[in-house]
Amino acid sequence: MTPAPPRPDALAVRALASRAVLPPGAVARLFGKKSVLRGTERVAVVRRGRVLAYVPAAPGADLRLALDALDLDAAPPGPGLRLQGPGGVVDAPAPEPVRSRLVLPDGTRRAWGVPERATVALGPVALTLDVVSGADPHVALDRALWLGAGRPEAARWLPAVDLAPPAPPAADDHVRTVERGVVTETDVRQARLRRQTIRLRPGQIVTPAARSLGHEWGVFAG
Image (cartoon, rainbow, N blue to C red; front, side, top):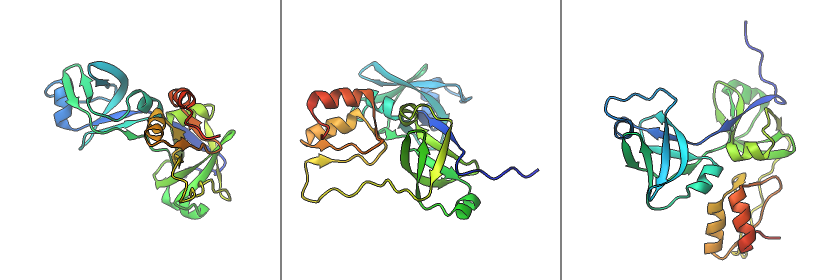
C-alpha cells in the first residue's frame, strides 16, 4: 500500500541533540584499537580536564562536533577543547551549532511549492527554517528550540508567512541581531566584546545561561 502523503499541518517534530562524528583514527584513540561504534557510545567534551558535556558518538569520514544551543553554552568555542573517551583523548574541532531545518521529499516540496526557506508553527512559536531534501518529512529542531517551544510533537507549515528579520540600518553598528532561532551565551559574550547590544526577535529562544549573562551585562536591547 502506498503511504499517505504528508500533511502540511501535521509535520512530525524531532529534537536534534549534540553529537561527535568520529573517523576511524579517532575511534581507535578514544575507544581502543579495532573498536566499532554501535550507536550507544558517548564521548566527553572537556577543557583543561573539566567535563563540559557528554555527546553521542557516530562514525564518519571527518572529525566533527555539532552542539545544540544548550551544550554550546556549556562548551563554547575556544582553545583547549578536546574529546575524551574510555581509551584516550583527541583535540576537538571547532564546534558547529546544530542546524534546525524542515526536511521534505523532493516530490512533496514541488507539490506544495515550498521555497528554500519556510516558516513553520510549533504551538505558540513560529520559526523560519532552511528546507532540505530527505525521504522522511519532518521538522528537525535544535533541542533548545524544541524545549522552548514546549516540546511539540507536530508542526504546521505557514506558506504565506515570512519571518526573516529586516536588515539592520547600516549606520547602527552597536545593535547585533542573531539570525538563528536560539541566542546562546557565546552570542552574548561576542556582543559585549564588540560593545554591542542584541535585539531579540519575536519567538526567539534565549538559553538560560545567555539570559542570565545578558541581563547581568545589559546586553539585550530594550
